[in-house]
Length: 120
Figure 1 (cartoon, rainbow, N blue to C red):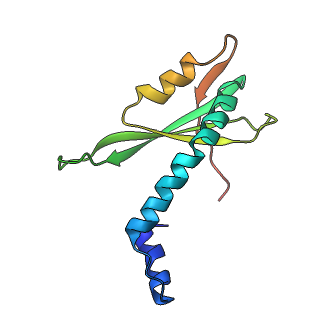
Figure 2: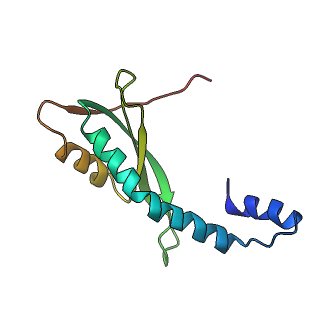
């Protein structure tokens, strides 16, 4: 939910909670959770099969008027794996996460791009 949408209910309840404070809290949570995310990513990369999918997203660069294409990557275990997990990774280009995942793959493992779709 966008921060401006979270700010409004607090204001109606008489709590002045500016978006800048909410953004700071999210940033602090991200920093503190990073070791957990890194450990989960390491576990995922040790799986014998790892579905990987990328989604292009627009990214604005400060000082530039036009958005360029960045990527949101999803790494997930297969339905048959004991560990059930998904890790998302953002990169400004296609090479980063996919290259890291392939380089970190032990011999005899494979990575593939897949569309994991839920039932509607």
